[in-house]
Image 1 (cartoon, rainbow, N blue to C red):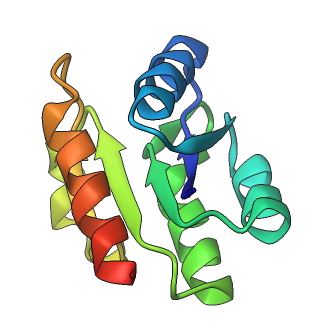
Image 2 (image 1 turned 180 degrees about the vertical axis):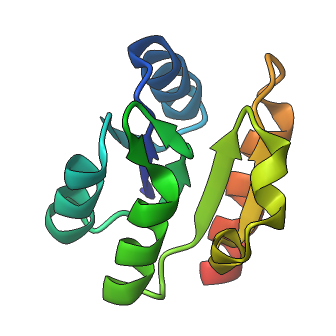
Length: 119
C-alpha cells in the first residue's frame, strides 16, 4: 500500500485529505510544518508527497528544496491556493502543481498517475 505524506499547516485540510486519500486505499501521514515534513521523509519513507506552499510562517518551497536534496525519487505535488507560485523556478522541482479546490478529483487523479509511474 502506498504511503502519502500530506504537508499543510491547516489542520482541517490535513484531515480532509487524510480521509479522502484513505478512502482511495492509501496510507496517509500528515504534518503541518517543514521540520515535520523532513522528519517524515526520513522516518516514513513516503511514496508521494502533497505539499502546500504557505506553511504558516514557513515556506513549502524551502521544504521542497530540502526534500529533493535528500530524496529525488519521491514524486511531489505542490497543492497551493496560490497559482502565482507556478512561475517560481524552485517549484519546477515538483512533479505537479495543483491549485487547491473544493473538488479533490484533479488531485486524486494526479496522485494515481504519479504512483502508477513509479511501479
